[in-house]
Each structure stands twice: as structure tokens, then as C-alpha cells.
Image 1 (tube, chains in turn cyan, red):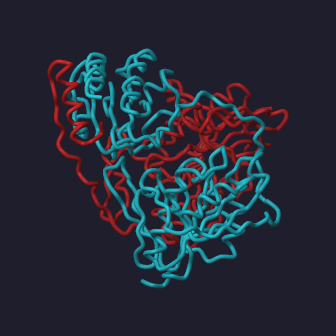
Image 2: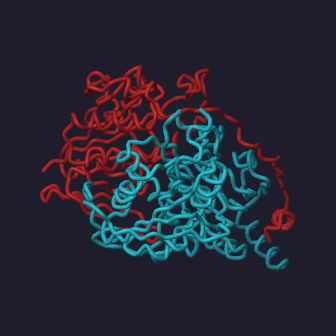
Image 3: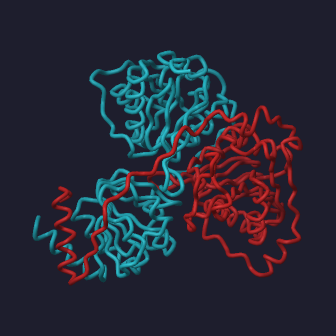
Length: 332
Length: 264
């Protein structure tokens, strides 16, 4: 029982990198969590970076955990990354004694976690909103039923597994001292079929990914069209925030999918969420309900957003939005 | 060359009904909440229907669910899927992800397909790890976060536009392959009356653990390697202030709140 796994294994992180080779923000969060758990468990924290050129990300990761294993894997570039990374990581982890493996819960993190779970035959706890160390293992909080309930889960006695961690639930913080980086050459064959990247298409992307924004100004059906988003963008610019949207606005083609917040979009946790013409239906609410301050501008005083916002201004979003711009500029 | 597509679908509590609650056993009280096809699975189903409309072929739905999963599957059949396979067994109640993966992989071993499609994640668990794990077990090429799926049945390959942080990666792999799709695949169709009528006579094969030659000691609730240790309510949000008045008064109320919370 308690103590069985204490201090025996290592808390491992499988890190992700950005296109420029730097460490992904989600990995800085996950690595911070790994170190916190290691301190609580009396264990150590370590990380793995698999990339064509892992140097920069590995050095960054060493700012968070005591030990980093970096593998320069040429195939991490021309092929879908997660399968390559998971296979290399599995090979490393097979000769270690992990207490738990942490990944991000974004698209790449979950692909790595799923593949690792099959390769290592380990259970997975998904989409953690908080992780503590309890009774010798991770105690994992998850938000379920559209945020109505928080469940706490653990691996059963004697088991260890993989945990995917939701972005923005941990504040990244570097350790006081730098960890050590070991560089390994890729060893052995990659058994899983690899998927070639035959082309990369760059689209005009939002300046700031919405998952990382401190302030989000979002528009819904009530915005009425692409022109209406000009006002949303203008308010976002004044507040130094990013622009988000509901599925209705995305489905209408007013704004790209990567800015969609909600059940089939992104889950965000900004300090401020300003919602224009958004009713606050459950499908949208699940993506933003943990925001620090929620403000709605809506024509309908009975819209669901009035049940969970801090402030709802009833009125025409264009009239209130323009007045808000003037008010903010006058206070600047 | 016609395409054989298997679409993984999961019945989930209807998020719109928001009636989910836990039963005394700590598991979802299925009687309390109406089940629907998981939203993300409807996008992959829609994509698969369009693909067989263009190339010819068949769409098979595959679910692991309680017997009531049959009703949910009928909606997918009404949308146009050709047949269904429902893996159901009392021993599967309380399965963890690992069991789900083993069971679906075993069911897929008994089917012939060019593509397996799975949704980005489910609205109840929000895990999104099952597709990658099944692909690994079956050693299938794995293409995820798909915004567009373009098979070339004559060449035996498939191309996928995978959403990347800066746009898209164009991926290519031989078939059979497993693809995880997103909302960008397109709005799912509504079942037509004709489709609803036709769905009643479409074949749904039910399989038990024994049919799949799986052991209830290895998969299912008894073999679950994770457990729920507690539940809590999320911290309540404060009361909502509602402001009605002139646009200027509304704007002032917003700016005052932002200032008081040091957000401006």
C-alpha cells in the first residue's frame, strides 16, 4: 500500500517541441508538475526529448527537471512525430523504472500517450486538471460531465501508468538548478509503420495561440458575420488578448477552427474571458468555464451565460462593444 | 476500388441534456441521461459516408457499449452507415482505457477494412488516446487530427491534412490505416426519414468477450488498472451581476470590474 512506490521510480516527462526546436509551453508545465510530484514522492524527475535536433529543447527542459535524455532522431522530422517519439521513448523507459509518465493532453501529447500505453502495456489517466502524490502514486483530478463534477482517480495498487495533463492547469516554473542532459543515439529499429509528412502548409495563424492567452475576447453567433469580428479583434487588441469563437461562428466560416473554444475545439483558462454574442451553451461552456473572470455582452438576459458569468451586460453587442472601446481608451 | 471503412463510435451521455450523474456504484448512471453518438464520432462518420459515396464501399460502425448502445448505433445507421458491430458484455462495465483498447483491437482483427476512423476525443472522457493505442496494437499507420481525408484506393494510399499549430501537415500512408478526425471534416448530416426506416432492418452483429476470445480476467471492469477514488463538486463561481442600461453604462460596468481585478 502506501509507500510501495515511494522513491523507487522516477517521474518521467515526454516533452514536445515547437517548430523552431524550442520546448513546447505545455511541456514546461508538465515538467514543472513532474518536479513537484518528485519532491512530494521523494523521487527524482526526468525528461525525454525526441527530435531531429533536440539540443535547444533538451537544454530548456533541463531547467525544470534533474535529468534529460535527448535523442537526435532524424525521422522525427520527415514523419508524423508522435509514433517516432513514442517508440524511442518506450525503448528508453523500458530500461528505467518509471513511477509515472506524464505528457501534455494536446494533440501530440495524447498521440504519444496512447502509443506509449500500447507499447508499454500501461494504463492511462487522461486530461488531468490537477495531480498530487498520494499513497505512493499519482492522484489525478479530472473535470467530467461538462465541468459539473471533479473526479479523483489513481492507478490500482502495484500499477504505474501514464497521465496526460491539460494545458494551463500548472504554472511553469524553472528549478533552482540546471539538470543534466545526456545525449543518446537512436538505437534499434522503429517497428510501427511510419507516416510520411509530404508537405507542410502554413496558414496565416493567429499571433497568439488562444491556449496561451491571458485575455480572450470571443465572438459567437450574435456577432453576425466576419465583419462583426473586426470589433471583437479591436477589443482584443486594446486588452492585449487573443480572439476566440464558438462553433457556430467557426461553422459559419467567420473565423478559423484553431480559434474555436469548446467541446470540439480548445479548452482555455485565461484570466479574463469576454464573450460577445455568446449564449453560453454547454458545448461552449466546457471550453472556458474555469476562466478567472467571465464577462458576457448579450441581448438575451436569460442566456445560459448569465448562470456562470461574473458580469453580464444586456444589450446590443456592437453598441456596448463600441462604448467599451471608448471607455477603455479613455482609461488607458 | 470500393472502400471498406470502420468507424469507431461511442454512446456518450448527451452533453446538451446536462443530466449526467453518478450512480451508487460510482459509475455513470446511464438511466439518468439520454445517450447520443459522441459528437466527434459524428464528424468521422460523416466523412466516411462522403468517402463511400465518392468511391463506393461500405461503412461499418463499431462500438463497445452496454446493450443500450444498439439504440445509439441505430442513429448512425440512419445517417447512412451500412452495418454495425456492438461489443457488449456485462464484464465490460467499468473498463479502463486499456481494456477498451484491447477489446476494440480484437474486434477490428475480425473485420476487413481499408480505413478505421476514430473521433478526436469523447465528450465524456476527453482522453483522445484510444485511436493511437489501437493503431499501435494493430501496427496500422496512424494519422491524427485530420481536417481532410483523401484516399486513393487504386494506389492503396491515403492522404490526410493534419492540423498543425501553424496550418496543416500533409500526411501520406498506405492503407489499411487508422485515422483520427476532427470537426473540420464537416458538419454531420441529419438522418432522413428514409434513412431512419432503412436503419431498422440493417444488420448489427453483437459480440461478447467470449466471441472475441478475450478473458474477463484480462479485460473489463475486474481487470481495470485505474480506479476512481473520490468525487467533488467544482468550486462554485460567484454571483452574476446583470447590468441593463445604456451602452455607456454597460461599458463602464465592464471597465470598472476589469480595473477592480487589475485586468486593465
